[in-house]
Image (cartoon, rainbow over all chains, first blue to last red; front, top):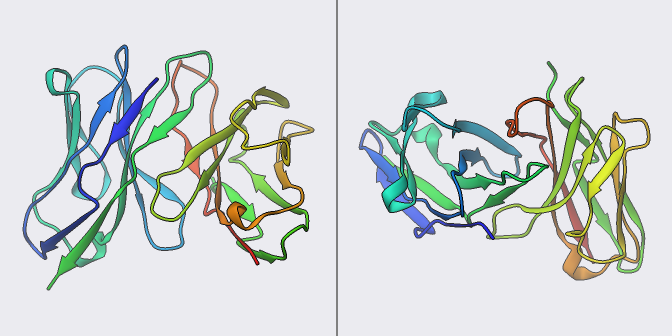
Length: 114
Length: 115
């Protein structure tokens, strides 16, 4: 069975500083990986996804993520954080069975300090 | 493209009552998913439809939970005899049929509070 670990429950970053959110997955084959962002009381917005090919993927709002098979990781990065980036971030892995379901990590809450 | 919509956005009910939530997927999206998200957790998959067929329902939390998608368009999730432990955010997502894996687009969710 697949699983996702986001080891950091909370992260605080100063505005303008760089950001890296960690995600480790467990999956028996090539995974499909996603990062979603959730603002308070809202649904999930897709930031970026990895299906195959280039292991560095670009997303919206200046985010990027790198798939590292050897480390079973898919860390999210942003070079300069804005106050509006404060939200909860979820990493997810997709199944390759006949239907598509997502297994999510517990999320990392990003706080941005002035 | 108006996105996935869910109604109501909030629901407060008393223990033992039945509740029903509605999800309208992005038009022409054949696949529809329901997830539950409790406080401090990521979303947890509940059930999945391809058109009107419910292809996976073993992950529904109990027999008090049921879902339908009668015409392959909108879907409803019903919880009978609600319990306080059912308090959560219920999220709906849709995706177009195509390659093995498609991107799921989420609605804003319905937040349920059971008193």
